[in-house]
Length: 498
Image (cartoon, rainbow, N blue to C red; front, side, top):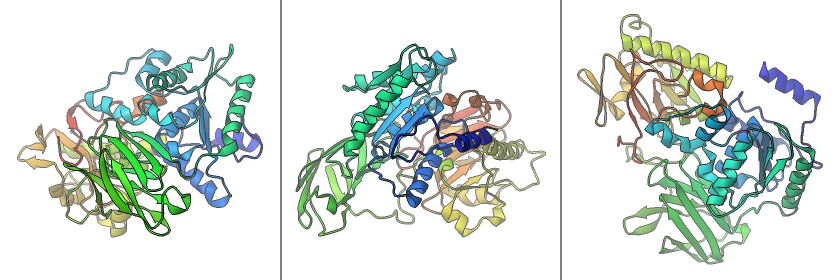
């Protein structure tokens, strides 16, 4: 009933915060998941929708929230720092392990792969992105969820800068009136000038190409996913840009010439990690050079779509892990009826197919787009990720793409890289660029990877499987896992097993 309560509340009241001369958007964000995964996409699409129908000043968009909305505010601020004039998160949670230890007296002990995946939504890892995003945290003095702001303030301080933390005196889980006035004064001051349309300096941290952009700079390649990557860029003059990088292999710039940051129609020296490149600038429009790292330094490259049959590389929008497929349009293709009653792998796949459809409806509040293998069209392949359940015998699409995936069934075993598991008792679960379309994923035998146990607390709603796994179909399936994970790992930046 929470959707009905939300709509009723919004129809009956303006809301806790309604400053003069503003438009306030209250996103629902897909149920109680703190605006993660599909909830994150919903928030961004809701903002884009309002921008399409109302004259929004995109230099003065503030992200704010309290409790679960505060958790969503932290993660939207650090992952999309170039969107906001300022961020004002309150309460909520900002990471996983310390929050569960403090708030629920529970210990979360992730696997090696899960520990790497915590970099996705653990906001302290991304705190560097708040250095140039005006942020003011709020907590009630007596609120256990003060922990979130304390963690983020400490993360910023460890990186050598401070963000203000307003604390409501003798206040539990609500906003103190005096604190609210202080926050509004902070925002009003920021709004006087607005966010620069084209900043002269950029400082951006990421761990994944799911989040590649800040202002006029986009990261297009990482040395290694889930390891901190940082880029700092500064316009030194009309004819010079200085860039330093860590863990980057590719980047592009996209500077409107009307910004007057660079000289139109002349050469600009772009210096990246000490390599100086003279790059011509057009006389008008936008300047959009692309660069790639090589053994001898950085070089200017022509940014083109990947050639058919060419080498694969992780890139924005095609970088994994499994849960990334559920942040864009997808279609489920289940096994064809026949062998499920007698073959363990097919029976497991059919049950997981039914469960994934049920749980998407239950948790992400939407109906699955479903096709039979024969119904999948060329348009589906081009516009949707294909989520395939079954075996090569029960799903013809799996049989079709399997020879082009980095998984093999050798005799009586499945193999991914050096990992092996018995074919009679296991199945591969993975995400990989679709052999049927270069801009889409194939997912085998998985919906979103957190399961029912994670519904107890939205801090637990995080990726639980990496790019690939070999999973038992006869043991270990419960509210936390689809089965005993026999082997798991990440594909490297060329989509090969490590």
